[in-house]
Figure (spheres, rainbow, N blue to C red):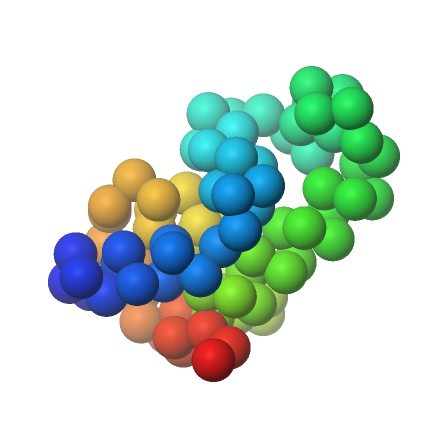
Length: 87
C-alpha cells in the first residue's frame, strides 16, 4: 500500500477516531481507552467498528485491531484485510 493510499484512508477517520486509533497503537485495551477518555467501553467498541468501516478493514479477515495498528504505523497491510473503505 502506498503512502498516499494510507494517508487517504487515515483521513477518513474523525479526530476522535484517530485519537482512539493512536491509543490502540500504544497497546491500550478498550476498557483502558474508555477510562482514559471518560466514556463507556461500549462507546469505544462502536467507535472502533466505525473506524474499521471507514478505512475498509474487514472484521472477518484477521484481527482488525492489528490491521488498524499496522495501517497507522505504516507497516505492510495485506490488501485482503483492507478493501478501501466506505465512500
